[in-house]
Each structure stands twice: as C-alpha cells, then as structure tokens.
Image 1 (tube, helix red, strand yellow):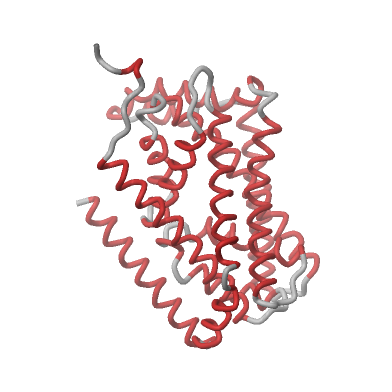
Image 2 (cartoon, helix red, strand yellow):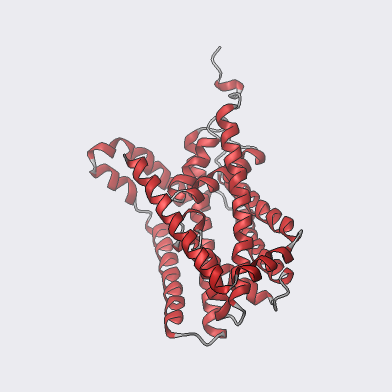
Length: 330
C-alpha cells in the first residue's frame, strides 16, 4: 500500500511538473526554445560528459570515505552513484531512496556497513559544500543586483539557513551528541538498531580527526563537482550566444543547487527546474527564453544519465556480479 501511495505521489508530481513545463514553454515560445536547443548542437556531448565527470568526482569522494581495509573500485563506485542518482530522480523520496541504493548496488563488492558509513560521511561533506555554494551565490546576488523584496527575502533566507546549518554542524562536531541512536532507543521496534547507529554517529564525528591526510582530496572532489557545474552553465550560455561571465554562470549554478534542494521530491525536477531557471535569468538581466533553454539542456543531460543508471540497474538485476573469493562458501 505504501509503495502504491509513493507511486501515485510520484505520478502526480511528475504530471504537475510536466504541465508547468508545457505552460512555460508555450508562454516563452516553443519554436524559439527548439531553435536554441538545436543551436547547442554537438556541444551537448560535452555537457553530458561534464555530468559524467561530476558523478565520477562523487564516486571518488565516496571511496575516500571508506575505512581501510575496505576498498571499492572506481568503476563500481561510479556505476553505483549513477544508479542511486537515477532512483533518486525518479521518485519523490529522492536521496532517502537513492543513497541507500548506492550501497545496495555494491553489496557484493564491499560490506554494507562500511559502504553505508562512507556514504553518510560523503553526504555530510557534500551537503555542507552545496550549502556553501548556495550561500555564496545568494550573497553575490544580493550585493550585485537590485532585487524585488520577495526575491531578496528568499536570498536572505537561504543565507541564514546556511549559517544555521554550519553552526549546527560545528555544534555537533564539538558536542558529538548521539541524537539519532537515542531517538531509536526510545522506540521499542527500532531499539535493536540503536547500537549500530551509535557506532555510525561516532565514525562520522571522528572522521576528520582520523583522516586528516584525506581531507584535501575530499575537498577537491566536492569543489570540483560544483566547479564543473559552473563550467557547464558557462558553456551552455556561450553556445546559446548569450552574454555570459563567470559570475553569471556561478549564480545560475547556485540557483540550480537551491532548486535541487527545494524540489528534490519532484521526479526529474520536471517543470520546476526549467521554470525556475527562466525566472532566474530575468533576475540577472538575461531573457527568460535563455534561462528556459539552459534548463532544458540541463534536463537532457539529467535524462541521459538517469537512463544510463536505469540500464545499469537492469543489468545488475539480470547479471549479478560474482562474490569475492573470500565470501564464497567452500
């Protein structure tokens, strides 16, 4: 019954997003948008490739978070990240489903516990980097542009939320409270998971102290993920012959991060991504048509990698990998 409700919710949100996309495209002009997308041409291959490298960087970060002696090949981690993202894009539960799916995908290559722990640590680092990206973009937007009161309020709220998030992260690292494990201990049905959650919390809190040499590489991977997002926007705007600066591309990508966070429950962020990008283009002095075209090109990239993840999931289901020799029965 729960699965049926999730499926219905996914269908309804996707339908709502599709209607919104159709309305925005018809309002801006379908023929003009189609001409813009055609103008991108073979540049779309480079944009899709950039998306793949971004997944690769998340895979690198995940591997760096694995506790020795556990290891995972870069190819397996890359495939798992693509599959997890595909599942997250297609369901309203987003990362609540997509992140565990990554660990499940590699369950025959690395133990589930270490894989989940490494994923949790990498997601904390990614969340903080994405929050910093959003806050930096909103601060630049507030300082450089004259904004409507409503837009200014959204920007200020995003900055405040980011400051609160970082303050909470610092407090957690300082106090190291067993928040989740204590909550599980209160619920009789979940009490048996409290010890494992307590161990997970301890590993997250102490990761930085135990892996000081790994932190620069981890930071480089997360920063590289966002830098490639900026590069993708810059390339797309250039191919559309739109006036573009590094600041404009940075602002677009920070707005995209914000849209991703807020509307992750919408499958593929259908409609809201394109409409939001079109509205944001006007804020930074570009035509709504240009913003909508950027959003549609981005959606083609998202659909490509979502389809790739779906194919990998099908292949994994029909051709399960051979377990490592150490796990086979004699």
